[in-house]
Image (cartoon, rainbow, N blue to C red; front, top):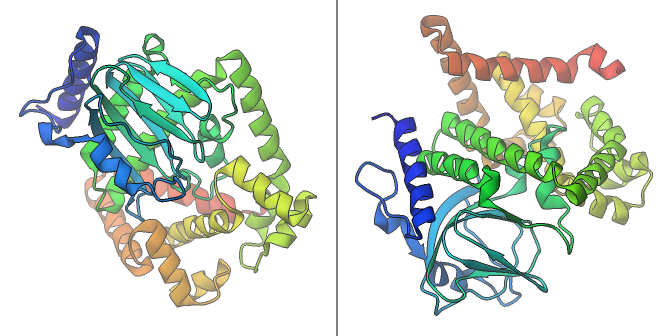
Length: 370
């Protein structure tokens, strides 16, 4: 049985158990042995600090995790908030979702969508519950591309009336669960290819959520507001593209957008999910990846071209965001290119094609003039 068949079988089994009110169980032919399910109180409660913030230990090169949780109905996790984004599938329930002053009920098969900095807790009010949860940092998606923030729209504009629960009958929760299981099968992502796979799966799940919330009347207004916010930042994005080699202080970006520095910092973070400095680093590193993939340009030259103060700092940031050194990344790309030439690997060819397109669009005069 192939991995895809196993994942499809597992996802179908989860859905059938949800309908019958059973807790999800696994068998020897699935990637989820019983030990995958952990007690949510024991796992999460001690990770909440005195300020009520939950800190999850992400892999810095791929800040995403999929975990499977149980609660016995007696010990509940305290109200907490976190800086990462959270998607929770209710395998068996019901689940009571307390978000700020609201109390929402989710049934088995529903999906719960929670952004950052919202005080919340998910508990089994009267009976045991099991959950499949996906945690991820926004910078995994906002990697310097202008369309990155649009994937995060359902998380960035969650107000007091936001519909956090996606009902099972929409079909979206089961599709997201299937993608979560695929992501789980790739973790830990120890190679460049697995990290690319995980990131692609995550974007697939996010676009399902974007499309779902866009079909909701009031949420469409939220999406429109976010689009207007991104349009207001377009002059900043263009400036970054044309002046990547320069030192770009926050104050200068704020001036370009016509805002005060403090207002710009808050506005940019809300619109993109990242601080301006983090976004700038991600943007520069993505361009560095493209240059390393398609050219033999020396690292010192790339470092200078992308505005890093010195090569050691560039290598440190690159390793933190990509998971390997620039030199190792270049060797991997050269190896992938050789593989395409010899064996016609379509996956590697598609990856290389995307990298080439990115760097050409970033440096082409037509794009600059546009």
